[in-house]
Image 1 (cartoon, rainbow, N blue to C red):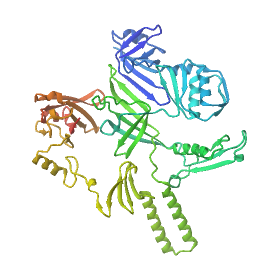
Image 2: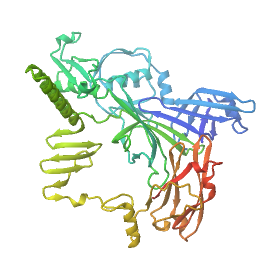
Image 3: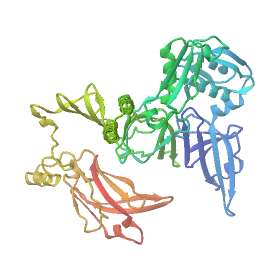
Image 4: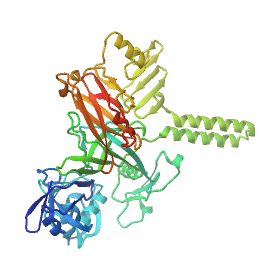
Length: 561
């Protein structure tokens, strides 16, 4: 339920579903719609622009939104009201004007404090940055536009604290999250998008020259080329020109920042709001830096959330969150050593041409060199030896033997030396993976010796769960830590849905009929029924009914939680 406040300050409680889209360094947008009834008739007929909305997340949420668009659609029998609202503080900044003429060299503190003295809000600068020269900024422009220009030129970001009515300005808005994102576990539908509209591989920089002078007078002239240039080509970025910079390292850092951040990638996904003991606190927020794992896309990294779209029901409970993780940079696929080797190959080719090597020998030489180049692109060569890299996993071949690393090379474990094989690295067979014996033989052996798994996990069942599909659990539900998770898969959309069954239901060895409703589209659901006892699960024939599409949903996995 949200609170709607009119011009006179009268408040109305409105039970509606809401969609809130929050973006880093930008305006947030709230959308909701409702049909006119006897209870909502007064709001339906009078709600208008500049009304206030609050209590979006819950009754303690003091954030305020201003109605900007109201649309009424008549169906002949009823009226549907659609509302769009923006954050009040941003709406206020758009109507506040900065009449100061901001000209000259300003530090971030001086610049943003100029906005503050013309605004009802506070501006707190938490990071330092170099001064920037301005020409007639402000000068009748809105406070919001002046803020955006300052953030862009100083390379800073903001977040708003409604408790103090203050904008906090930082080099980077981020908060290390205490949850993770794993495709298939608490997130689905990963999509990785690359934006190369402003992709650069080379840049020139000029520093240490008098004001109003040409760059040819610069005493400091640098060029930076990204290692990818020899692979994808040379794409020149606009030059960095700053006469005040006299330190070569400072200028080079600015140049690298432009080039290294020009290839932007964003990762979008559906974040599953799992309200249980382990995920109850995991709500995505803009600025969260989250460990993300997706085996298919080869992503194993900490990435910052830059946009969150949150859908809540009439009781303010989160139904769905769509998350965008932005400015995600892949690790360079080709290290500088590779480019150095390619340069060496080109030099050998030139030398061979100059020495008039015969066509046959030259063709063979070029073939060998090209093959060597392919090897260099697949492997890394450095002082540690030859490395095969996949994500954070490394296999290192050196004069001392073979070592492996699972954290990007920070910690290495010897796998094979002249003294033999490290037995600790030999994969042990479990119920889930093969080892020195197959996982199926492991299950048989454990049953033979009555050695049950300490953690229940049954994967790849892929059954409709009809009355003939009897599943014996490897542990009684009453002995589990908290209960069972049944993972259902919709075959048409290839989406997963989780059903939680608490162990508290089985203290007296009851048999329980569980009906789980699985969403398959807008206002569409499929019900699957399971008969659950303390040590087994069986279904019913209706679970495999073509008429009601229940055969399109299968039970894929069972886990303990």
